[in-house]
Length: 291
Image 1: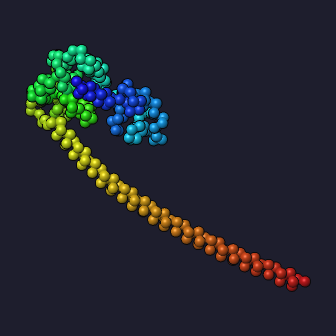
Image 2 (image 1 turned 90 degrees about the vertical axis):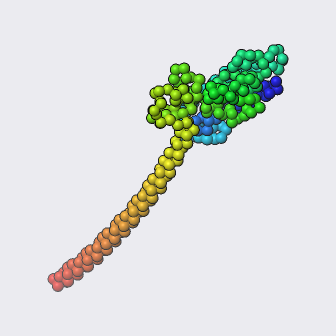
Image 3 (image 1 turned 60 degrees about the vertical axis):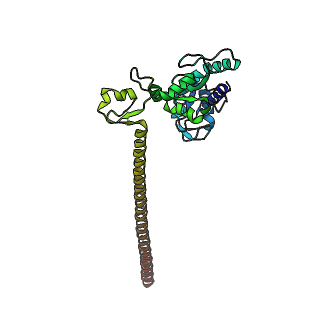
């Protein structure tokens, strides 16, 4: 019984806004760091943590997150948070009944009233010990469900609910997680899709392998872009160096032209002065002879 209450407390704590310290209300997730807050809380902090570059700073880790035109409503709302929040109140009610020992709680999977042993996101609530065992042994549960015994529940498990809650959108496949990637169709598929004739001859890999390949490609592309960046930076430096050298040569040529022009002006000025002096002398001599 204590484990049920402890689980509920941990579950509720992970659904608590770190700003207002209350259960998340209209949760908004920051894409840069995945920290989640109440819509009103992050909206109120927008001006406080908004940077000059037009980014919103996370109140927890200070990561800058692009927020188009400062509009908080455009931030993503992860549906998993809303799903977990919808489960919280019914589970708190069940935990209260367990604590008061009114009657054995009901398993959300098999509907039997017996001691609860764990939680399953896909079963949408707390389940009994038998169902926990079924989840571990039956293929249909092992493939598509995330069942956790109360004592093992932690932040990592909770985060897996958030990141792995991606289900197939094909009709009658909605409860199946996307576990494979069809390279031919370039789309994620579930195990039922994989078994269908549509994908039978296609090149298919697990989501993990596809993610590993994608990370490798991203890493290679990043390395290639870094090399290009270094190359272009070097070319820019060489271009700047060439520009500075040409500018220096132009400045030197201008200085030569300026100096030569000034020298020529000085020579002409001296010549003018000499000519004027000569004319004055001739004028003086002729005037003296006439007397």
